[in-house]
Image (spheres, one colour):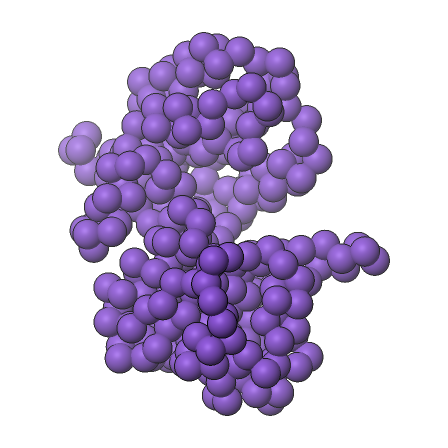
Length: 282
């Protein structure tokens, strides 16, 4: 039976470290959160981030805008936050309402305040392995592997899902850690042939039950990034947990696995931004 990778406990440890380092700074770190519209899921995510900030000694400044906000007004707010020395990090909750250009908004955020690592400059630095921000979910996955002493160097790593938010940056981070990486997606033929070779298998697709027991190598580490809500309202990931748990050496539960780590790494990103800004002021 697989060891459960407890993302909730590990996230609590990281947030405690962030709180300690934040308290040692001359000024309290500040995260500006921009929420446009009334999307229920986005409302829940923002409230969760506000709780995380409170736990970590980070001040959260929420900017809630109506769904009919114009693109130019949203861009003006981003520019104001870019120029506000009090705001260390800027987070725009996605998705934006229909009619708003999220790409234009995200690329307008100043790179040194881009705690989600969406700006092309930060993505480029991450891909090159340079110091800077890291996308929260991929960074959380790497932290979990490290915490549970799961080696990456020389191992076969298979990532299912090629999104710019998770799959592509995670493939880059695993490659930088000397893993041999295969990035699979909806056009991949014979998916199971790839997954059965994986020492580390990560699924980030959003399709419940995609990864079945016969697709997993004995003794593999299986990381389930997806969060899907079933017909009964119960949360589940891409992985058939009961079947895969019997074969894997390590597995992440859903919920309680990658999700809490994503939020913890965001807090670490805000701390990094504050440290960067306050070092410049000295």
